[in-house]
Length: 246
Image (tube, rainbow, N blue to C red; front, side, top):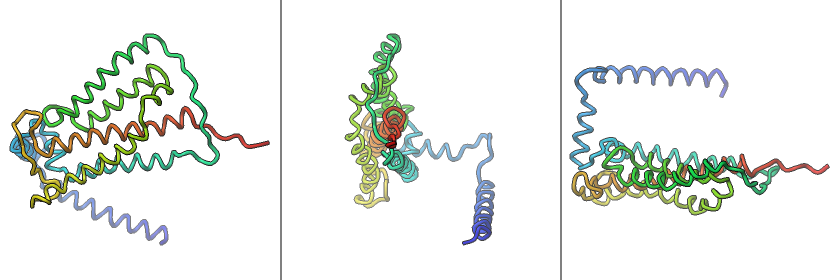
């Protein structure tokens, strides 16, 4: 296919997409008005499923299939980064050297690490109740682990980072999201339909499938970001070009 043909195909597709977007935008409610039809429907649907955090209700219930795609993108990105950053033939690993850390930085990191772990765990566990959730809590948990790198050095981070286990955990958690959608199909509803017992409103056991998916996302995001940062840190700290023989 020539460059001219590819350009024409692109312009045609872009024109069709632009026209569709314009037509769709004309049907949207006015911006800045008093009517918020989508927000009102989202709130009503979330409360009907006993989900106090409406953002989580939207992410893991009303548009759970879209969120599955977003999680899959993260999983694919980590997988792709791992393949691209693997050790090349002209590279080798060297042992990371000890780094000097200021006592104040070491004290700050050691103090903040358990606080960050607790905060991340709380955000994941209470994602269906209050602001936060699996995506945010997973990132906070990753940050907590890497405080060891800030407060000590890379060698300490490697000792406390179970990278092989996190690789497997990332894959299992990502797959569990897709598998949870089968519950609705087994019960005669749609894929990812919220058919689990809804529990009591504003309790940890509330929201049905939302709480379970939220927990799976928290595990997947936390594991994925740790694995992703591990590849980049390895490149920056340990991987060096192999010297060619003279």
